[in-house]
Image 1 (cartoon, helix red, strand yellow):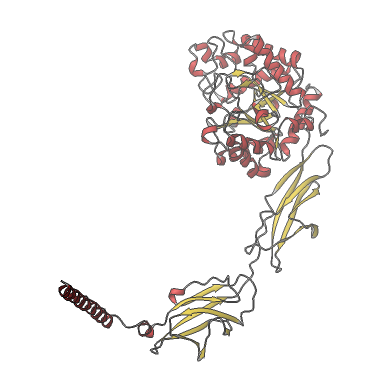
Image 2 (tube, rainbow, N blue to C red):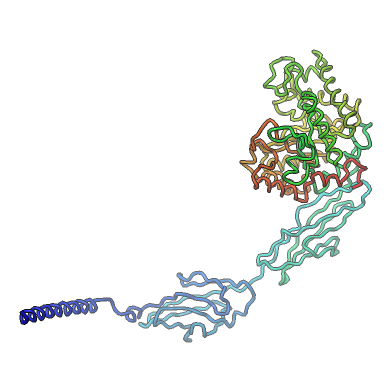
Amino acid sequence: MTNHSNLMRQSVLTHSFKYVVSFFLILLSFSCSKEPDEETFLSGNKSLFSFSIKELPDLDFSGLNQNQLEASMTNHSDMTKLTAVFEVSKGATVYIGETVQQSGVTTNDFSNMVTYKIKAEDGSTTTFNVSIQPYINQAPTADAGSDLVLYLTTGASTALVTLDASESTDPENHELTYEWILDNNLIAESRTAEISLGLGVHEVTLKVIDNEGASHTDTVTVEIRQMGDYLPIDSNATQQTKDVLNNLAALAMGDTFAFGQEFPLSFQLNALNYDLSTSDCKDVSGDHPAVYGIDPHYMLYKSASERQLHIDEAKAAYENGSVVTFDFHQRSKTDGEIYFNQITSETDKSLMHDIVNDMNNARSWYFGELDEILDIINNELDFTIVFRLFHEMNGGWFWWGTQATNHSPALYVDFYRLTVDYIKERSNHVLFAWSPDKTLDTSYYPGDSYVDVVGIDFYNPNNIDLKQRLIELTDFAEQHNKVAALTETGQQQYVSNNPDFWTDNILSVIEEGGSEIRIAWVLAWFNAPWDGSQDNLFIPNAQSSQQVKDDFITFKNNPRTLFQEDIKALNIYGPANSN
């Protein structure tokens, strides 16, 4: 058994040895048949893998694969002694002319294009060119801002002008110095500056200079006009009414505007609010509006308690310095409807025509309702009201609009004038406002003798259209010596669809318009008490999303917007220019 085992063991060893020998023979065969070794393989390689300048590590080269390396200097540096750092193929030698180059050691003059030659071990060569463009300082760009038109209030001889060069730029982001020059005199040396200028047209030149002495100039035209007196169309208007008009004019001609809302205290989602110390506006922003819109509709046609609520709301506005405006959604005589598509009576469809022509007892009915409003103005309020008569007449939704029987702009003008004349004879507390829908359709304009304030109502505005309409409104107001206002605005479902409405669609438009847009106030529509949906808010309430509230807070905190505390300080009801 022992000998047999030994023989078996020897046999296994013999076979194992044969397998090992065979394996090594296979490896040897494979080794002999492989490609040439690395050194042999690279003997004809002459590639450039990387290139940089030691003294300028941030210099960015392009064109490596095309053997045309290019870079541009970003500052002033000596280009005559620069050290190249490069990586080339193994075994290759780099030359400039006949001089061997050592990566990170050899210096060269790069003021002009440098040609490198890479020579492989087999003697073959290739070249690559390096071009470094010297630094050339680019001049800054001066921006003196948009041209300005400012107004002197009565008694003032100069206006304070803010010069702003903050939109000036420099391609290299150098620190800039600023020089403001008027009539060849240096008047300021800061990016923003305040100067006083008198009546006339002034050309102010801005010069900006970078830290290498390069400069650029721009000019801003500043025109200072005399505002003049704004006299109410009612020659018997109270002194307070005269003061309010002149103060609103001064507000419109300045750099700020008042924010207003319809029924800000009394209307909230789901219910009437009888706590006049609160409002959605104050809950979100910390302050009430500077302008209150009040509709006598809710005094004449609602309960005695609601009538009193809105009277008290108007008084609260006045006592805290806010402006009060009236707009009247009057019901029709027979059907008791505001909106034309809900009217069935033919006499109600022709109501405006019948009032003007004193037919079907329409005029006596109409004057009777005006008397109720005048009683509130004269006896319960006894302070100045801006009465916005029969607005949006160029639309077809109201009974005084374009669908009315025998409608024409001339008929509306007669209707408006009849109303103004009636009110003027019975109250001296009223300023009269006229506000078409969206466009300033002057075919409906009652004339300068019947209007104190011109406005437009513009809902769901896009920025381009709103800006153009407000510029047109401003131009018209200046030409006719009237006060301009954005008398109604808002966007339905803005909470969901456009949460930045107040900053993006209203504030930005007025800011971009600069001195081309001059309005006294902007009024948002109400948050309806008969609705519980956030989609029907026109300003946020406490339950709105934080994004919506933050946008409104940003709007409120902007230096251009005035809320109740701001306008109270201006004393709108006091002697003109007392602020």
